[in-house]
Image (cartoon, rainbow, N blue to C red; front, side, top):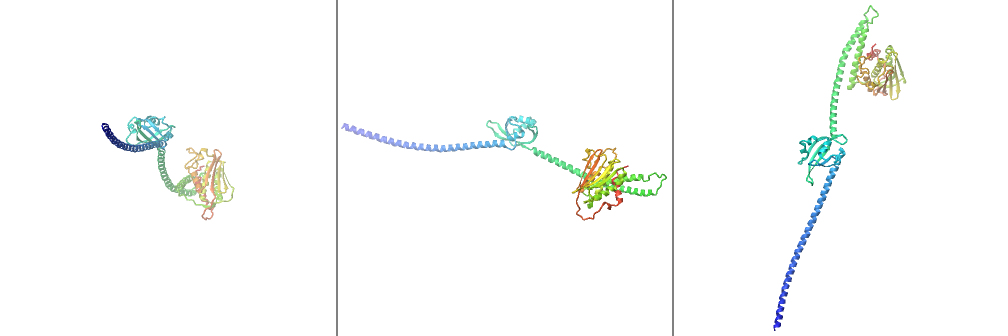
Length: 475
């Protein structure tokens, strides 16, 4: 019985232990399940954190790449900018100058490592860097216009730059970084200077034109005013000549017309001068009339030449007329052609010594008629050839010159030739003589006019014109 009781007691203990173990096992299962759930939650949280971390890393990487690209673009923009640019710190150290700066000035950063060295090299800001400008140069508050400066570049020339500066930000080492940009305004300044010079020249030209207009108007007025008293004096002399015819002198050798001849010649000379001045002013103002006719130019020039032959031969000179063509009808103003020929012949007589020759030759050059008037006179100095057709120019300007003249004649001749659309030139050698060459274009007038010749002009008119054109030739 005792053995059986022990057995029963042992079984109950085991059963109880087993129940406890079952409970403990259930507890552990629950505990494991709970731990597993917590672990899963932590794992999920770690996964989510890892995703967030990866996103942040990616974002930071993108930001860093963007910053690197931005820095690269900034550096590229500075380096390749079409204007000169400089980066420098608040203590004056130059960190970078771009390619444009170097291309224009020739200086590299090794040549100008600091603002002070650059100022000394370029020849600018030297005084400013010693004074109040230092604070402006390193202004960290706002962009500013530093003004215009002339800078010396490496090849020795000078450029004009307008400088602007601004604070960019802090560097990694703590220094403040500033930028200076230059606008090259050299060409603009040159254009402005040129524009000012042009305006000044225009103003001067206007003043000259206005003065020339007043002078021309004055010459025109004074010439007309002079013509009237000269004509009165000349008329009085003609009346005096008529009265002298009835006068007789005991001494028959006395030339009773001597002084009236002198007075007449000088009246003619004054009239010629006045007429030339009036014609010059008319040409300048565009009021000079041309009366062109279809006329035989050969016959016209021959008659003009023959009309002065006696006068020229009386001066001890020989006059030769020659032509390669017998007739040529062209449109011209006979009166103006007459003045051209008489003026050149007058100069030839004036400067050709006795025994000399004057030759008038006409050549047909198809599209032009060539008139050559040659003499064996003293000739024209080589340095004066280019100026003899200029107004008021005389070859001999001395007060002791042996021939008179106003310096208007050949200028007027040139104008009259050019009014016919012709040209005039001169060949000359001192001591040998001169040759005036005139080309008049062969054209016909559109207007239908009866052909006229020089013979239509009255003989008295010829004599009058000869006396007028040859009035400055004295015995």
